[in-house]
Length: 357
Image (cartoon, rainbow, N blue to C red; front, top):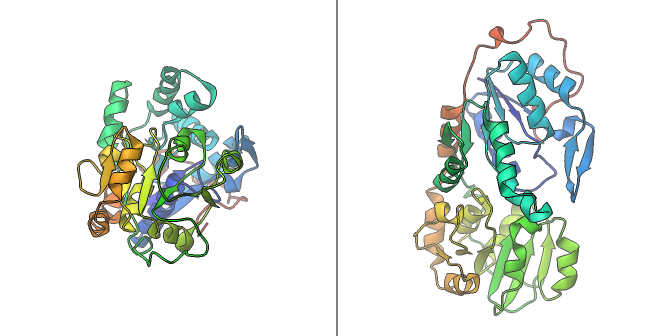
């Protein structure tokens, strides 16, 4: 199939949505599908208010239409609710083109955490955005249940996988000298932002050393406030995987993630998880003996130190990307392009994301 994916989240951002979409692209191309990703890299952008690392496309409508009509897709998937997602949604609705969407991020909770916007207002906006979608893809049963309570419908599962070749156990001393604090080492990987509730981790009275891997708008203020914490900044690829593997426990303080891909990456690295018993951790870990879920995050972190790393690794190895790709393909809504697009569209002048990022 010719599959067009629209996403406001893309490189150089480093987060679970970007890693998921990048892996999806590679796996679909391995299966012979032809893909184009419409991303902010092909547009003039401005920084997102309060989060300058995120770039927002400016007036993308004309280029979006050209991208769609030139590629003549038989599947359109809108991954995010930003300017590009809105532009693609507007195009599809105007021309009656079917499309699917995904609910990756709890923006209503994020808006509430940053600007105190009522959560109910945010979900009203999300219902408006996703309402015309043929299928809303969600990662877990917990998020599906939440969306059903907020009045969403036509929801289907799209789980996540983990790269168990990259994220694997390594010698615990791999970063000795880089990290000098005493053990145990408690690791957090993710955005350093208010919606991740990272303060709940940093304020814990724990033995040993806390390690934070990731960038975000709170990085410098938290670095100044917590001088004993090792802030590694953004890390990618082998470096990122090494930071997972040298830890003794992974602490996940977020209450708003729709999945938490980092949970599987930690487990694949042999790193037990400590988290709150909320959607995301409950769906990924549940009652499996690979994590400690507790409203007392300190108790969970200490209990995680007693968990067998080999059990964590085995748990992650059963969560493959192949299942995730199968689900995505089952959820999309193919259509005949000739019924919707003109046949004489001129070539695009702006390159879209056909190749590697």
